[in-house]
Image (cartoon, rainbow, N blue to C red; front, side, top):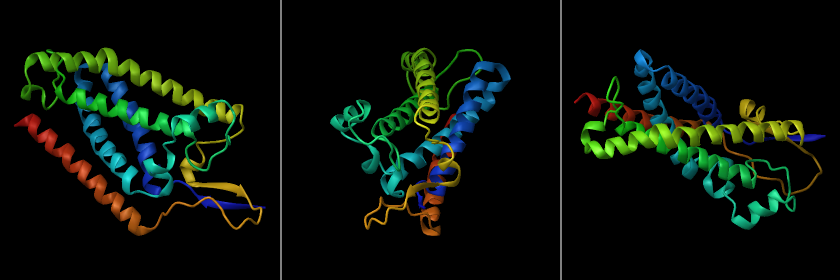
Length: 226
């Protein structure tokens, strides 16, 4: 017998798969260049909205989505990596929590630098003209030469971790991100790991936060045209 526990609320799941689609679009259009840069900019604005939502959701979202509940201290992370701590976690494990944070920081830096970037040929970010040329050039170099390889490295690490958990530890981390639930043995214990809220009030809050992110993205786009 097992019990089914809600781990990932609907807003987190929609964010996760939307982020996958938008990042893939951004990478593909950036490599294609030329007329595809219009879509590269659009995907960048979509990333602004998504990232604003996720940073805020880490503060006010459901239990397993909050920073305070999945960012572990250094000793706990080292113990997990050495196999001296529990290896199966309901939410993010100690190492996975920090990898999520690293990915969000890298994406935020990539989007932030892109807002000020200028390739001097076809495309410039909406805020490129708002800073001195040397600042725009430095941020463009970061966007292309530092931020992009860093992002590829984190993506590769993320995929490797998913494969390791699936093939070695026999733990499917993708399926719960589709339906939101995990199954735990029903041992009759009184204390169980807390489930995440996933009611309409929480979803309404998520919609409001995403709307704030979208408003910021539209404002940035307007600044680029002003």
